[in-house]
Every structure is written in C-alpha cells, then in structure tokens.
Length: 77
Image (cartoon, rainbow, N blue to C red; front, side, top):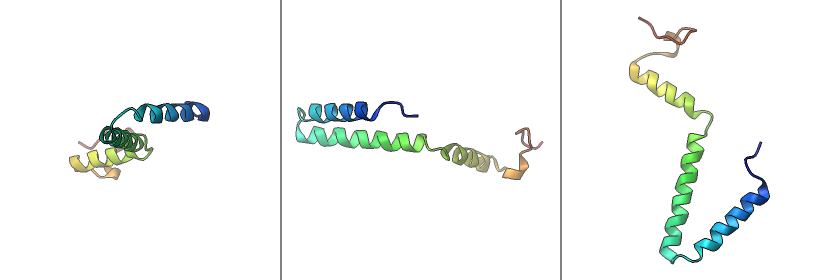
C-alpha cells in the first residue's frame, strides 16, 4: 500500500515549502532542482521494467541472446 498517508505527505511538502522561504532565491531554485533530480532518479530506479533492461544490456555486452540461456539461468559452454 502507501508508505505514508496523504495528510503526512501534504504536511511534509508544506514544511519543505515553508523552510525553503528562508533561503535566497538562487538557493531555493537549486534545492528545487535537486529534489526534482532525486525524484527522477527514484522513478527510474523503482521502475519495474528497469531490472529487465539492465539484464538485457548485460546479456548484450556478453554477446548472449535470450534463447541462449537455459531454464536454470546458466549460459552456454
């Protein structure tokens, strides 16, 4: 399910926004950009298809095709 409740997320977002007001404009912009970059990395990392893409890339680097790998996951000799 969800890690935190919707109200908790809203409260945390509001606290972040209020704390950001203390920073100068350039630092606010940098903090916002950093959070956005972290969010994007998190989305890419937590994507359910990313593990398959990494495995396909690793197979491609080794020169193996998908049908070269047997049911036990071992490569050919």
